[in-house]
Image (cartoon, rainbow, N blue to C red; front, side, top):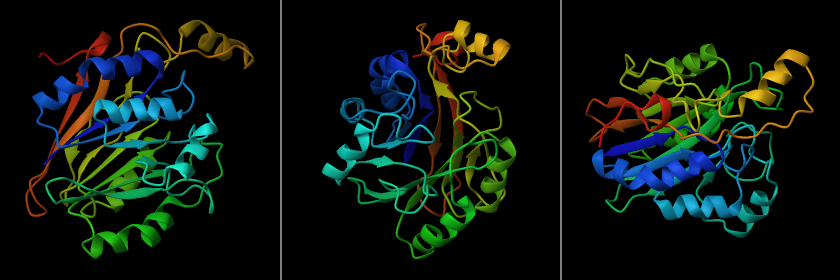
Length: 271
């Protein structure tokens, strides 16, 4: 099977890029299942029910969140009213947080696909449980019991060291482990020693002629003055779709991983 993971969609330009190119991307890479991080999709902050439904209509199978999960509070009521939703927030959010930290999807080919997300703790001002403990107590037993044919762990966080630590610790447990949140793609896509496809951060889907997706002027004012009253707004230039494609035919086959950068100032793909 071929799996597509797309990094943090930032604002309207990120959504428009997906709307314009997702079908051809899926066709080119013969994608069977698509995961998109959308925690910045609503003007840079959060996810709305309308945007979620637009992503599903585009052909997205699973939508992940992060530290901006509840910036648009209406998404909580939507999840509670639609229990079959495919929105996944960090597994290690505090106990009794709304939503779910993983979901096992039933593919039309009969395979089961587990998607989960954890949030790292370094440099993050969000109350969190330990990500290792959350994975050990909620996910690993499912994998060891054979509840999924394929499994993917998204690690949302700032520090490359934490992302690498989680990746190395759970190497061989998941089909793929990849990072999001920094909005900058790293250059280390590879297969780890025990067979898990890994990349430290898959980047963002947004305007890279910006400060991690936001217009430059106010972001730089914040840096120079230390005053956060300057409102951050998503960039409006052409977006680059940034992500990875992971291929794996069965639990016994060796996986492969490919980074993709499509459109905008970082474009590397031709159609």
